[in-house]
Amino acid sequence: MTQGSHASLKSRNLDVHDVIILGAGAAGLMCAGVAGQRGRSVLVLEQARQPAEKIRISGGGRCNFTNLHTTPANFLSDNPRFCHSALSSYTQQDFIALVEQYGIAFHEKTRGQLFCDGSSRQIIDMLLEECRKARAQLRLGVRISAISKSESGFVVVTDQGEFRGRALVVATGGPSIPKMGSSGFGYKIAEQFGLKIVPPRAALVPLTFDAALLAQFKEMSGVAVDAVVSCGKARFDEALLFTHRGLSGPAILQISSYWRDGQDIVIDMAPGTDVLAGLKQLRHDHPKQEMATALSGLVPKRLARIIADATAGPERLADFSDRLLTQVAASVSQWRVRPSGTEGYRTAEVTLGGVDTSELSSKTLESRSVPGLYFIGEVVDVTGHLGGFNFQWAWSSGVAAGRAV
Image (tube, rainbow, N blue to C red; front, side, top):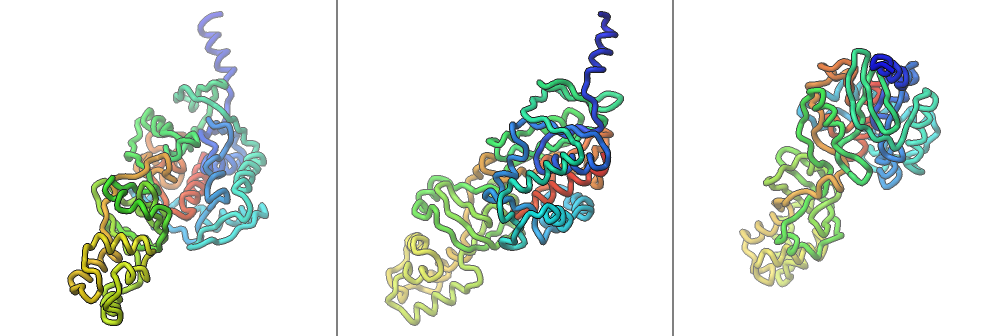
């Protein structure tokens, strides 16, 4: 057989589709359903043995699938305006309508966060049914060894054969939660085709303490307090949880997306309370009371004892000067603490950074420099706050690409 005829035979053996989507997560499955229902032949390639593993584990197994209050202000990016187009073209109300169409019962938990009444599996089944109706093919457990661009599109070489697509959609997510099979594979594809990457890092992630702080707060592990946590101009008022590594809870996960190494965070553990005025009143009304007892009306007893001990003041409130009372009050309402780091991708809910939005069309998510190449979902430098916003970005960006491919 001549080399030419061998090449021709190899070409004929290629599995050809209009669209190849890499990744069967939230964004990839959404894109597949939309593209397929427009009459495109779609192939979804997923390295894991099951699709949508991050959906399955999300929201404690009930999937916080969107947020009623989604706006572009709920997202971080080097270009904050980039997400406007996709979010306005396919809104949270559009996704809610799809959920209702499938008869999936849901409820608002708090602050606009919507969860399934039953299981996150309902959302996965809905997306898979949308793909089935669109005749999109799904291949699981696929290992990709090479991707190249030809005149007619893209060739994806895998351990299950070679596949050709006129368009290639990268929906591989970021490196967060590696036990789910996630990685930085999408960034490698972007770099292969010359696209810039905003350096990725863990986001919506617990913060850690150094040895000295861990020793000081070791008795607090498992204790939660309502708090207002700020870093720079960012500010979140939600629960805070002390852990055996440092701090977690919604307020901490939110602020972690804004925090950088070497920065302090400021924590108010008695929001809405004038702590100094309260302590002065207690000094007047109960002069013999100990500081730890006085503080236990504001914060958990164990924390009250730690703050009182750290102040190293006199035993009785009567003997506290105004200056010392101000110092104690600040320890409660303006606790300035410097985390040593984060728990990293292992426990991060999402990845900050990713494919630079300057490389992509905000309307279609297509590469400006490589026609037919799209990036959607978490792999893009768009990261939502905690509370269903990252899923909404997956739906919106998936639809934007699905309508364009």
